Amino acid sequence: MATHDIPLFHLENHPFEMGILSLSDQATLELVNDKVRIPHRHDHYCFFFMESGCLNFSVDFQNIDIQPSSLLITRPGQIHELGFAKDPAGWLLAFDAHFIDEKARSVIDQSFLKVILLKLDAAEKEGLCTLFNLIYSTENEKSTATFHHQLLQTLINALFYKTVLIFQAQENKRIQNHSSRIVEITRMFHQLVKDHFHQLKKPADYASKLNITVSYLNDTVKAVTGFSSTYLIQLEIFREAQRFLVYTTKSVREIAFQLGYEDEKYFIRLFSKTIGTSPASFRKKYR
Image 1 (tube, helix red, strand yellow):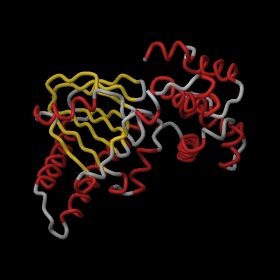
Image 2 (cartoon, helix red, strand yellow):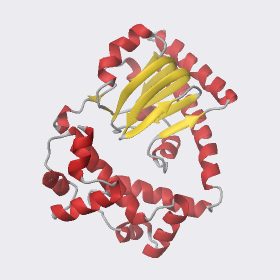
Image 3 (cartoon, rainbow, N blue to C red):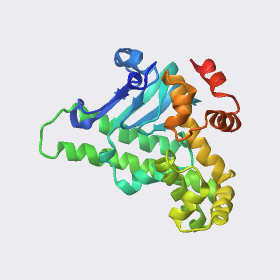
Image 4 (spheres, helix red, strand yellow):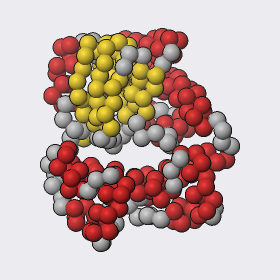
């Protein structure tokens, strides 16, 4: 499967550049079932809100079970596919990034977690359920009134803000022993790696961009994440390599070159050390 054959789903043909589906609507689910059961990407955000039942997804090679009272967030560009569904009830909401306040969006985009799955308490579940229902009923009005689009955008932002508050509360528990400066440096490093891993391969490259020493970067990142900066850089690189191995017919040599490695053997050695298996074995397992 060539790179261009990986389906990339857009929202440009949807009214208001958003869409919402009830997961308990079997007729609607059957229409989209064939699309979501193959690996695909979105150019937008998706929220999978599970009230009851279960959905199984693979998101960037991580197997995820969305249990009752849970919310899965997928970000633009992540490759995912549906595994199975068991009596699902809840909502699927898709929306373009431009809908959302940039500062709120950055909280999710700069998360240390590659896959964001939130477990909700009763009050959080009830609050999100109310917002999903409001978005659904408003979208179904199909109104051409002047402020209808603005109303939808406001409701989606309200949902996003509420989700960010829940996410921050849960993430703060994980990082509460670290100073705000250390956490912010780690977030900035994480974002820089996502933006520049094709070109920048060494911790020194990122330390320079952050105007700190390499040793301070290493100590900071290790304290917050438990991993070295070198490992996290290589993990980002080889996640992209995993996508190429499974979803394209490129050779290992071609993938290595595209990711900035002229020495194929060195690339294979690093991939095997980081992922725990060789590129060839990984491709054989997932194709």
